[in-house]
Length: 404
Figure 1 (tube, rainbow, N blue to C red):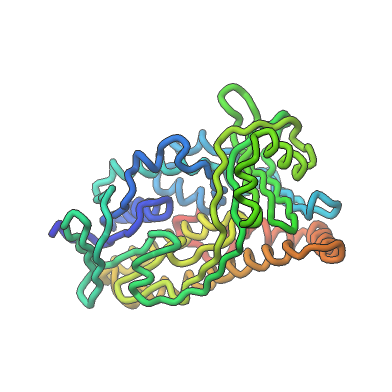
Figure 2: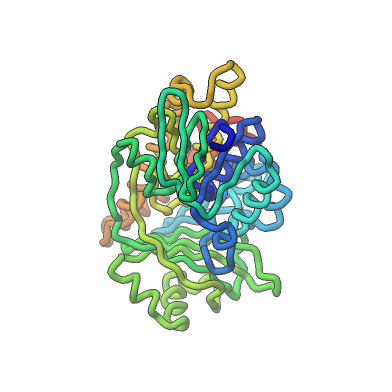
C-alpha cells in the first residue's frame, strides 16, 4: 500500500483538480485518481466547450496561484442580455465601471492545461492517471481504493468528483432526484463580422435557450463567441447533420443577424441535458463535490461554478477542523460541509430548472407575461443587483478562497 494521504479524490477534472490544488495550499495532501490520460483531455478538439467563470470562482483560481497563467486567456463578461426570442422587454445586466466584470469566459481546454501544469508541480498531490478505481472501501478508521493495476491507496476521506454517474455515490446508496430534459446542447464556437463588446446573450426560445458567450478574438483578429444551442433531442441529430452553410443560416436567424456574417470556428458537439440532485452530499468518510452531487441545466452557466463553491467550502471546513486536531474524515466536519452546501446547491438547481420550464412554455400569452416580468426587473435596480450578485457568485456566506 502506498503512503496514506488526507484525501482520496475520485476524478481529476476541473472540480476535482481544483479541489486538490486548493487543499494543497492549506497543507492537505491527496491522491487524485482519474481513468483518463491528461494528454487526451487537453488534445485539440477533445472538448469544444467553454465555461463562464464567475467573479467568486476567479478569486478561487487567483488564491490557488493560477491567475497569472489564466489572465490572458479569458474574455471578460461585461454585461449579460436576457431576451425572450429577441422581442422587446429584455433585461440588461451591467455592473458599474468600478465593480469589474460579471465573470470571464475560458475554453475548458485552457482551464485543464493550467490546472494540470500546477498539479504536476505540487508535491502534496499524488496524481494517478489512466487507471480506474475498481474497489472502494470506507470504514471507521479511513478509506481506501484499489486501482485496476493492483495498487491500493489509503486516505482519511474519500471525495467523489467523478461526475454525474458517480460510482461512489451509488455504492453509498445515496438517492437522487433526477430527470431527463430530452434536450441536447449543441456546442461550438463562431467567428463573426461584428464585435460582441464582451456581452453574453441568453436568447430564450420555446425549444430551448440559445446562448452566445464572448470569447477573445482569434490570433488573426476575428471576433469570436461560444455558442450553446439547446434543441429537442429528436432534432439534435438533424442539426448536427446540417451542412455548415445551413447550420450557420439557422444560427443567423435565431441571432437576428446581430453579429453579421458567421463562420464556424470549432467542431459541433452535442451533450444530453439532464438534472439530478443528491439527497445527501456526505456519508461515512465520503464527501461529494460538483456533478457527483448535483447536475443542473446549463441555462445560466452555473454548473462548474457550483462545483467550485463545493470545493472551496470543503477545503475550508477540513482545514479549520484539522487545525483543531480533527482528521479530515471526522463526522462533525462532514456534517458542517453538508449544512453549508446543501441549501445553496438546492436553490441554484431549483432556480435553473424553474427558468428552463418557464421559458419553455410556448405561445404569445406566456411570452407576453414573461416579458412583462423581465421589464419589471429591468426597472428595479435592487432586483437587478440581486441577480448580478448571484451570477457573480458573491452572495451569501463565501468560503475564504472565493473572496478577493
